[in-house]
Length: 220
Ligand SMILES: Nc1ncnc2c1ncn2[C@@H]1O[C@H](COP(=O)(O)OP(=O)(O)OP(=O)(O)O)[C@@H](O)[C@H]1O
Ligand SMILES: [Mg+2]
Image (cartoon, rainbow, N blue to C red; front, side, top):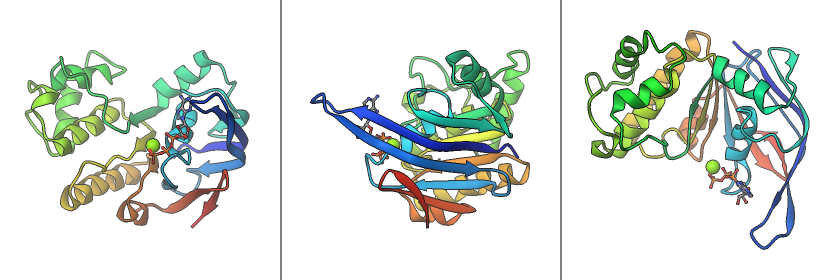
């Protein structure tokens, strides 16, 4: 299990009208040492997606420290990009699939090892319950199927950390349960999950739950 640790994080954002607003102040987040999965809860706009982007190293604009597996990460885009590519699978809010490419091409883009990518894509699609759909275009999939393809893409590189932003937002209850079962299987294999969600059902399946309240995380 890979531990991720954000300490004493403060971050401000610029509102559309130009005003500066403090989003996080003295926030700590520790995940993974003993807990395979953490749910991030909070009102819309409270900063869940922003926190995931910080963990992914896609948002570097904050004060505080970030370590992975006990090692401090120097916050440059090069170090963070390497960290992300080596360890992380990311399921974004809204999938971000390329609609002019096949499902297979979308999955290959998520691979670090291009040579075995076709075989791995078949495995990942099988894993999310969509075997044989490599040649389809994302536009021809239902919302739930597209969500599962986005999850398959995140699994291509066998990530030790999965960051998932509303991963079941487009799914019915039964499919949500299937996805959460998949996530649990990956946790049993050693992956660490951080999941931003509005769903109480998703949160209930995580080892720990934190809510963003007053610019910090409170365990709930
Ligand atoms: N690139 C950006 N520049 C400036 N402000 C931003 C940027 N991205 C997000 N914000 C603002 O930061 C705040 C937190 O946004 P964020 O997307 O992290 O919230 P969230 O908790 O994920 O919300 P939701 O539940 O709706 O997904 C919001 O007020 C949003 O408008
Ligand atoms: Mg969000």
